Image (cartoon, rainbow, N blue to C red):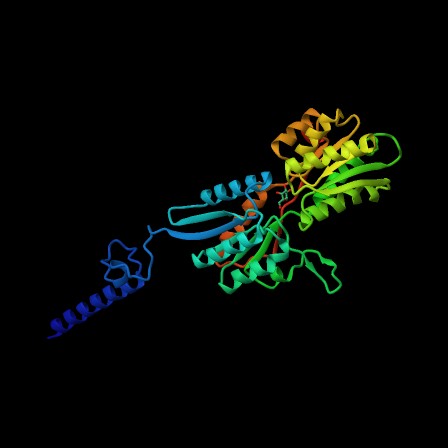
Length: 363
Ligand code: GAL
């Protein structure tokens, strides 16, 4: 009887130990112990299998494909998304041309919403329509990253509010990624200020300039126009604006404006400031046609640091430009997009620095 009881007791202990062992080792890590846990054997429906890729749909609307700088930017953005793909995460990126038409872009955003994209990246045609674009995305519960054209708010008196756009700061899933256009304008002015003659090419005691403006509604254009000249006046340099005209970031328009100004003002012109390199390329052609020589009797400034312009600065046919870092900006926009897709908290604003590019840059 005692032996039978001892045997039963021993058997009970063995069963108890096996049962305990299986619970503690719920993940089946002990190869010695047979694993009887249900979920180890049959994957349940609500758990994605490890090999199944999650595809995020991203809608991108660029204000206009026909723009040198934004072409570099959009190609880099697409390429960078690709580099972040893994076996388990894919990005289906649809990039649309806003054709510089606000209603076209609004349709694109509406289509993205109907298609159920997970995130929208938008380079607004008009920053004054940013609220409409943001509201569309927010009402559909889709996060939005605004790029390149900074929406600026205005206070009750109509004064521009720096870096505090209500539609951005009040929405935790909206942000702006860009560069501070004031910096680019300041750098343009500083390149002229730091020359031995401080930009007074004809020696008449003042710097007379032609300003070729990107487009009037765009903060990049507004700030570059203002801050390039401010850098000169802050240094006590006397300036005179001969003419300021809108070239819509476009090479042909830049050429036309420069050509007319050169005919009208001739040797009075010391400097041609262009809000971007696209227009500066046009102005360079007009300067050559007019028989003027950059660095000898006239100065030419742009922004973006397109490859052609870097080459011209090295050769001396352009005075300077400012590197608009399309790589840094597009990567930052994508990195933030991925954070939003992962449900992470983001900042309202992300800034990427400009870099001054003149002859010294290449020494
Ligand atoms: C600026 C750039 C211009 C043009 C513009 C479009 O930042 O310098 O070349 O691309 O953006 O908004």
